[in-house]
Image (cartoon, rainbow over all chains, first blue to last red; front, side, top):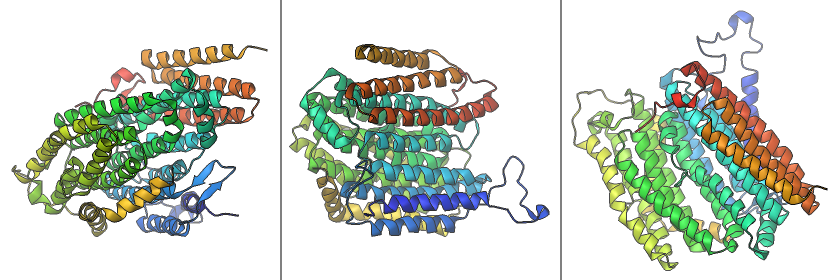
Length: 484
Length: 100
C-alpha cells in the first residue's frame, strides 16, 4: 500500500463534501423557511470562502504529507515524481488565488456562483491528475476534465460576450481535443501501447510517417492549450469575454499545464528526429512575433494580457526547443515567475473592473490616484512580465535564453531579446495611463483585507524571486532532474 | 478479415470529413456533429489498432473516448442553448461582438 495519490484523494474528498453541502442545502428547513431563490437565480447556498479555504488547507496538508513519496500506482498509469510534485504545488497556488479572485468578482455581480465554484474545484482535480499521468489515456481524460470545466466557467456569466467566448472556446477546444485523441490513436496504432515509457521505447525503434503525424496532431492539441502560434486566435476573445478570474486561471494554470505535458512528453517525441526541434523553434518565433506585436494594438487590458501571454508562450517554446535538464529547469522557474505576475495583474484587473464599466485601457487613466495599491501591483507585475531586472520575470527569460545560447540556438535567443523592448512598450502604455494621465473620476477603490493580503503575497513573491532566485531554481532543477 | 489499411483509410477519411464540416458549416449543432465524427475516427483507429496488436487496451481507450465525447456534447449543447437565448439563433456568424 503506497500513498502517493494522497493529494488527489484529498481533492476528491473536498469536492465531494462541497457537492454534498450543495445537495443538502435547505433540506430539513420548514417549507416556509427555505431560502427563496432570487429572480433569475437558483436556490444554491451562498458562497462560503472559509469553507473553501479549509478545503485548500486539506489539499495543502496532503501535499506536505506526500513529499518524498514517489513511485507509480494504478498499474503504472499514475506517476508521482519530483516533477509532478513541483507542479502540484504550482497548481494549488494558482487555483487558490483564482478561487479568491472569483469571490471578489462575483461579490459585485450579484450572482450566486454555486456551480461555478464546484466546477472550479473539478478543474483543479484535473490539473492534479494531469501532471501525474503516465499513460496517454489518463492524460487525455484529465485534459478533458480541465477543458470541459473551462467551457462551463468561460460562459458562466451568461451575457452576450461571455457566451460568445464560451462558444468560441468550445468549438476550437473540441477540435483541438479531437486532433489530440486522433493523434493518440495513431501513436497507439504505431506503438501498441499507451503507457508513456513503453511508448517511448517502441517509437524510438523506428521512425515512421504515422508516428510523426500522430505527434503533430498531439502537438496541435497541446498547442491549443499553451496558446502558441498558430493556435492562438481564440485567446484574446476568450480572455476578454470570460469572467476575469477564469481568464486568470486560463493564463496561469491551463497554459502551464500544456507546457508541463509537453515537457513530460518530450522524451517520447525527441527521439523522433531533429524535425521536432525545428517545429518548436518555428512555433516559438511566430508566437513571440505575433504575441508582442498584437499586444501593442490592444485597447482592452484583458486582450493585452492575452497577447502578452502568447508572447510568453513563445519564450517558453524556446526552452522546449533547446531541451535538456537545464533548459527545463529554467522553464519551471519561468512558469512560477509568469504565473505569479499574471495572477497579480488579473487580480488587479478584477478589482478595478468592479468599479468601472469595462476593461478598456482608458478606464485606467489616473488610477494611481484612485488606488495607489492596485496601480503598484499592476506596475510591478507588468514590468515583471516584460522582463525588467531585478524582477522574477527577468530571471525566467534570462535563464531560458541563456540555455538556448548554450544549446546552440543563439539565433532564436537573439529573436527573443529583440522583442523585450516591444513588450516593455505595451506595458508602459498601461503604466503611463495609470500614472501620468488625468481622470475626472475621483472615487477610491475599496479592497477587502483578504484580497489585499493575497496581492501583497503575489507581489512579494515576484520581488523576492527577482532578488533571491536561487532556492526556487534549485527546486526546479531537482524537479527537472527526475525526468532524466 | 478486412485489411487493416482499409480501417485506417476510413478513419482518416472520417477525420478529414469532420474537420471540413467544422470549417464549412456555420451552425453550432452541425459543428458539434462534425466534432463527434472526428472523435469517432479516433475510436475506429483505436479499435483497428487493438486488433492489429492483439491488445485489449485500445478497445478500452475507445470506451473512454466515447464517454468524453458524450460529456463534451452535453456541455456544448448547454452553451448552444445559451447562445440561442442571447442571439435567437445558433449561427456562429452572429457571434462577433468581441474584437480588437
